[in-house]
Amino acid sequence: MNRTLTTQPKMLILDDSTSALDVATESRVQDAIPEFAPGMTTIYVAQRISAVLDLDRIYLLENGQIVAEGAHDELIESSPLYGEIYESQLGSNVLGGIDEEVTP
Image (cartoon, rainbow, N blue to C red; front, top):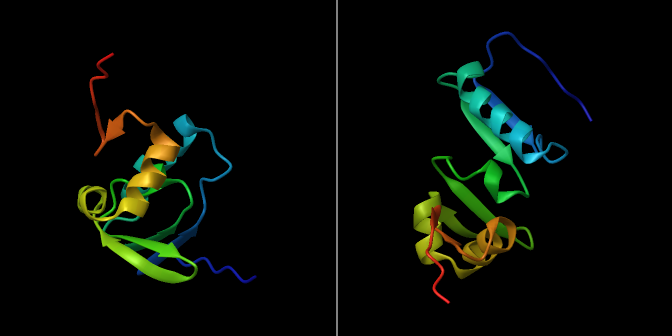
């Protein structure tokens, strides 16, 4: 694997860069990336949906193929698979980033 560091890159690729971090640290890292890379094209490769919630475009892959694309809100509405992943990782009482009231 080769890695290159340049002082003014036009693109930043992060390959599952926060997977070993706890949720609080992951959140701090995600918040810092736009400050570190203003105006830079940033590509995230992630298995945790929490790492991509605020991105402009999300591409959902299944078996190496793009099966859905869009912003988080669009994918919640249009992709059952994205919804299943979201629910399994972030909780069954969460929809579109808003906690639903649970009625007994």
